[in-house]
Length: 318
Image (cartoon, rainbow, N blue to C red; front, side, top):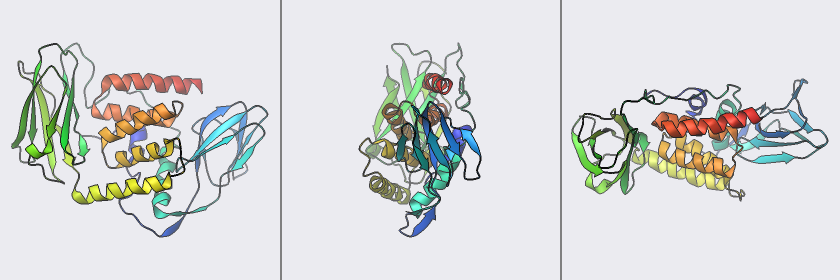
């Protein structure tokens, strides 16, 4: 499978796979997430510009609001700063952070401050495009999966009709069938992991086809996280709780958890986190951009269309 473009390609190294207690110097950064009225940015270089949504702020930059204006800034850790009229704020030139947040800041500087506009995803996903012909598209599992009690298989059928029977087939790297399940009148099925001989760290392929016709999805590849990667993932989740312990809204944790899942290619969990994120903060443009990318990447075409329209409305309103 090919990686998506735009926002998605900038989040591939969101969180590094090493937890270190050493203290490092991290450059502080911020993103403008909302603007009302006249807000100006005085760059550390001395240049002054009018502020707009998604503008990135570097260390030493100063944001100033005019009378009746307001602005919201978000730091790379998800911490937000709100300024009302006739207020100013200077982004710190440097701050002491552990290596976990230091690395996170570097990645956010590439992701959140990109000036590239969100690209249309209409009709884009795994080579699938809306058509009058019947198509079955595999969705989950894809890319990477955590070991759990069950494995969810989900697919879409653009001409779903009552009485449809599907056969889901799971194969290992050698092409041998690990599991075959028949499902009626549904587009998903949960299969207990205990009934399959799945090996952590190994790659698998699955496919779904209509039992009564030749219509079938493309084979979808995914890997089961290794025990080591799963242990590190759990450690990072605990680390995120420490970072976000003072956030009563849940926004910071939800954002960083989504980034963590994206970095681990756990797209189903990333979709869930991003869906919650845009509910917590509907005006957060970058959150909508990431959700569009996830929908497109896993093959949820209709959801990608709907989310893209929301994103375009937000961008046009700024």
